Length: 151
Image (cartoon, rainbow, N blue to C red; front, side, top):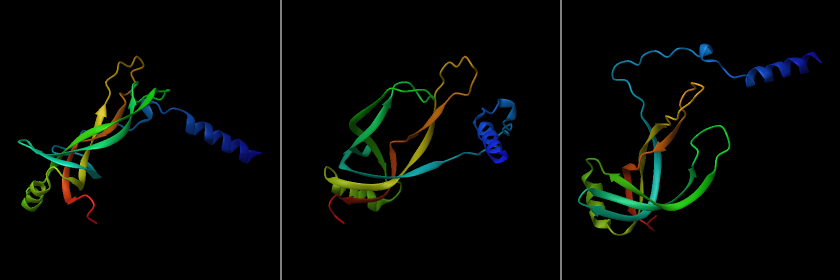
C-alpha cells in the first residue's frame, strides 16, 4: 500500500510543470563559442550545373504543419515535391572534375549538411518561451559522388 502511494506521488511530481524559478540560470556564452550540428545526407537525383555551381533536385516527402510547433493538435498535410540541394565540393578538385563529367546524369551524392535551429516568435500572452524546431540546411558538403547504378 505504501509502495503504491509512493509510486503515485512520484508520478504526479514528474508531471508537474517546472517553474522558471526552478530552472538554472544560463551563463553568458564565452566569446567565440558556437554550436555546429551536422547530419549525414544521401541524395539520388540528376546533377545540374549552373554559373552558380552544382545542385541536385530530389523527390522529398514531408509534413506541412500549419499551426507551428505547439503542444496542441495540429493540422498536418503530407506534401510531395522536389527539393533543390546545393552541392559544396570544397577545395576537392577531383570531386569538382567528376561533377563536370556527371552533369545531367542520375547520381548519388553522400555528404553532410548543417542542422540549424528555427525559433518561432509567436505572440505568447503567458510569457512562455518561444518554441523552436530544427531545419536541415539545403547545402551539402560532398564526401562522395558517383553515377547512380554503380555499386
